[in-house]
Length: 364
Ligand code: AMP
Image (cartoon, rainbow, N blue to C red; front, side):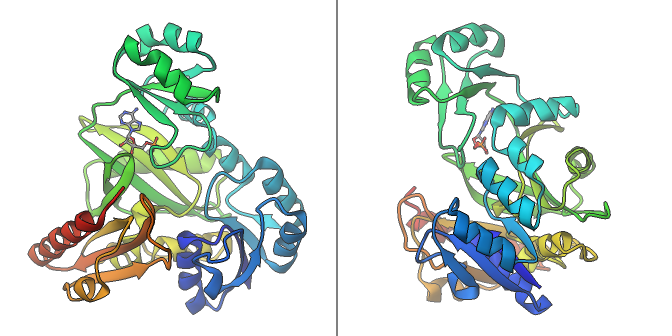
């Protein structure tokens, strides 16, 4: 079987790495000559909306998936008219637009921060008495890793906040004073079977994920599972999904979901019986889903902007390095490392060492 992937970056690379033992082959479409999955696949080099290349992708692949959610609606439609595309286009449409996404959560009775649609400075001025300060103005589309966001501390910030959107449609959200951020990764296959991973507890800085740690038997697990189940069933979803949540005094508020494999689930490569990448493939091929059971204590640390020396990283016990074959650049994720151990103290020791190394080279 051949899997088509729109996008050939590190997520496609890790999907391909999980697929080889299952006898799968891959074809990716990516405009970057040096795409991370290029060496592991038949690489179609060109724009995501190139009709000839999209036709080739659809013709050659048995099923097409993607590694980013900002797939233009007409591209998703074109592919779906020619082949099987998972996750479904409606999940993309909702996940690409923060307003539709928040409305969808609320329809499903999944709590969120208070929010309002903002199309002008006047909308923002009118919304703020209800939303309250501080708040975050976010562009509705094309936002990731805190990009396209402005923290509004007081009424004095409103002009600058609206200007920073460059006229783009936005939403304003109340600032949530959460105790922690968590995400749940789940997979669903066409028959409706669902598996859930243990919660990831996530630490961000500057809107970018730095560390994700597996939380086995977390008290919020059941709540997170019931939230993500509602999403999966309402979307008739197929594939892996990630739902990001704020924990406020034990109550989980939804921030956003990603209709794809997710950075906060990278620890599953060594830290779970079946990785999120393999379960994504199993789901889109309608194969039995694998166990999500954690294998001891596990966490993932991102390397952003720079990398410690391989020798230094590989000399740490219980550490597994995943290089993305990307040139270091300010703010760019170039690698991650997983720490996994059955021994809590040893796990914590290696995690601390790894975090220190990542911080030393971080230039985001
Ligand atoms: P996002 O791009 O929406 O995932 O936001 C990136 C990060 O900014 C989140 O992981 C949070 O750390 C923070 N953030 C986003 N929205 C809010 C909010 N309404 N209240 C507090 N922090 C937020």
